[in-house]
Length: 70
Image 1 (cartoon, helix red, strand yellow):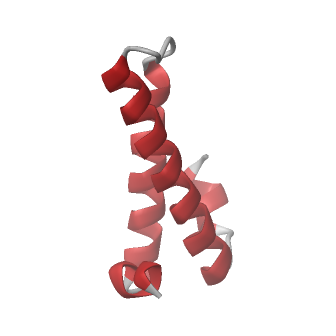
Image 2: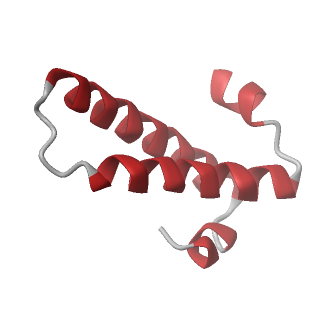
């Protein structure tokens, strides 16, 4: 995901994408730990996606922890 794509998302879509990105990152970390992950660059790409989405959410003043718990 590009930063411009993240900036164009509505707040609800942004939070949904963030949930998905965190789940994807967790799954990739799990695969890496068990030795099943072949494309290790996907792990860092997923981490960057999470960081981009968190940055946009914080710029908008969204309390990410509160919103993801609900």
